Structure formats: C-alpha cells, structure tokens
Image (tube, rainbow, N blue to C red; front, side):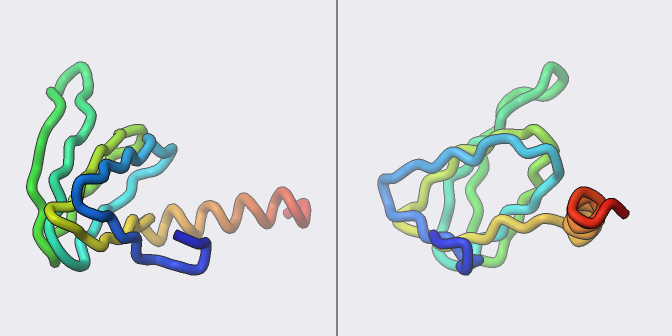
Amino acid sequence: MTDAQSVWHLDGGRALTLAGSAEARRLAVCRGRIWLTLSGTPDEPAEDKWLQAGETVALSAGQTAVLEGWPAADFELLVPPTSASAGRASLGRRIFGL
C-alpha cells in the first residue's frame, strides 16, 4: 500500500498485524471475508471474528488486531473525524506555534 491508497488488499493465506494505536479506529471490509483476532484486555479475553464485505469493527485505542483474508479481501482502516481534526490542530500548533 502507498500513502495515496485508502484500501488495503490482503491475499489469502497471509496474515497482517495492525499494531495498537493511540486513538480508536474502525476496520471496514470492502470486498471478501476477513478472519480477525482482536487482542484482549485484563477485563476482556482475546476475540476471533469473521467479517464479510460491508461489515465493520471498532478497534479501541491500544488494541492490536491480526487479520487474514479468506480467501482474499480488501479493507479500509478508518480514523474517526474527531481524531483527525485533533491531529491537524496539534500539527498546526507544532508547526506554526498556534
């Protein structure tokens, strides 16, 4: 995937680990089917899920996800608009001293 792309492709038989992030995200399946394992917390065990095209799952801040296409899949990793706005404001403060 390049920086300009918003949809990721996952070949069948290949696993991809999405490291935890400082902010919440949403994984949306565009095409195919994904087998997803979400990391657990002290209060919640790790969880496996199947996601079909059109389905989404929320990833909490710090949550790791391992996904595999069955047989292949396309997906997007989305950041809520409030998080994106906050990031831009922070960037403006660092660059322009705002």
